[in-house]
Length: 170
Image (cartoon, rainbow, N blue to C red; front, top):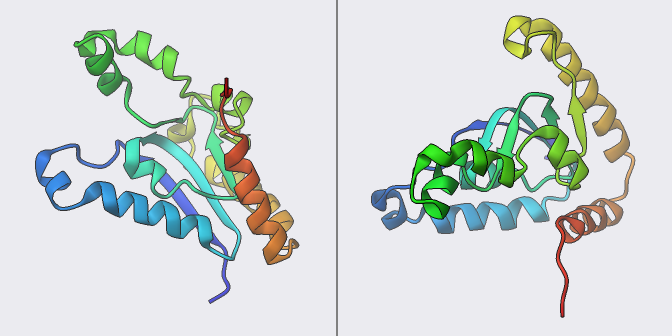
């Protein structure tokens, strides 16, 4: 269709049970990651609340990731991380700090491309104002992305994900 894709992310993630694993949730998420990375149109994601685990990451391979200022985004929930690392969800605050899942943290790490301001008290206090801020940010980013050639768009998308993180080869 040649239309840009906008994904709104607000999910605790894919269900982590045996049943979903038996039905191929991991493969489905991986397939979606691959397909989204290959889309030849501008793709934007807006994290508008909680974006956790594969349920969020599966639709997060985009040219730009925008986050409402009080939203969170991570490969695992703080509770899940705490249960794995400290064998107790009681350490969820420590895990949340370590995960660096806030919009501000993710902007500094290059995962998030823009923080969208929320009304005083959070987006839920004034949905119309929050929607106006988000709409403006989406339009601004789409304006930039739609002017790129397909080749440049895909090259920038690839470069974005290659640059994320702090890693070294020894």
